[in-house]
Image (cartoon, rainbow, N blue to C red; front, top):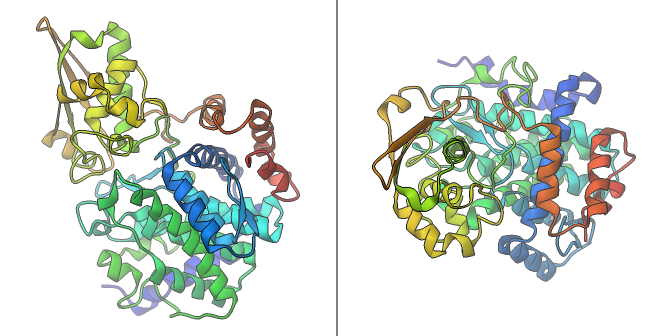
Length: 470
């Protein structure tokens, strides 16, 4: 049973951390990881700017009009109102499902949320509007990241897949954007509390929209509404002092409860960007499928498997991966569906030995070879894997060949890109080059990477944004 003193102090604790923490208070490791997140987040915004979803929101922004104060990144860059810039960059950042992920280390949880795009989109938009020094944007990003992950860890697991079905990157990601924007706007404690209250009533996003443009829209609205919540609070709009933990507040309405001890005394202790850490994706798809693709790639390369030699594929994994988990689409017919379809991911590796932007395309997904290979893949849950807990992502893959031989492999528990097996700085730079190659010229790409390496030392965002807007 919660005591009133604990029950009423959660929002206060979040707000106090948000307004008091300074860049000098942040461990060097948080700064180093944050700069990697900014490089990765910017990469996927640029790549995602080419998608139909991003084009729709750019068209919407042109129709709405307003004072042009911040830029969209990547293709068809434009200056638009600050909240709409956050909206457009937010949808671009998640449109390819290539942005990073925070995964739980708790057995009752799996994916917490995608933690970078919401505070980064808000930070870019408000930071450019106000011409804020990049060191302050970096600090605001880390603090927004911290607040939203701690909220995701604290809310009842019922909030997520298998319970109430919310998409936490939207419903909780709004608080990352709100805190980042509030910091950059210089809001005081009461104003920041009001911004959190406003955000709690603007939060939205359901998990049923996986495999459609509506999924990245959740991230888009989280970034946009986070900026708006902070702006509203700056203009004097108020809200309840404890909107998160109050009766009929955010935790109760969205999760049915929460664990205050996951927030009280834990802000920055440790920083979430360090633990549970961040997973930077090697593939543009749902992160829980990545160990499976790497496992299939290992089988294919070690045994030099030709696709025509494969009779069938058996994939066994946990319910944190497939229904009711995020990879719930049994057979993909579009690129968006493919991001949440294990049958496609196995087919892609078998057919091309990779699963990149070219593979996650309608043309490849709908090709006769891909459609046929998907039909050879059988996917099911394994009770023994489920028993390990939702925090463990495990695949057991067995190939049956046309000649009757079988080959089996189990996934590495420390998946590539995760906190315990991170992409190297060189691999991250290569991901940026891959993501940006169809939008930016080579000189702009290298200029961005150089500037991002010293992000905290720039006077404002103009120099760095000039390299990623066309």
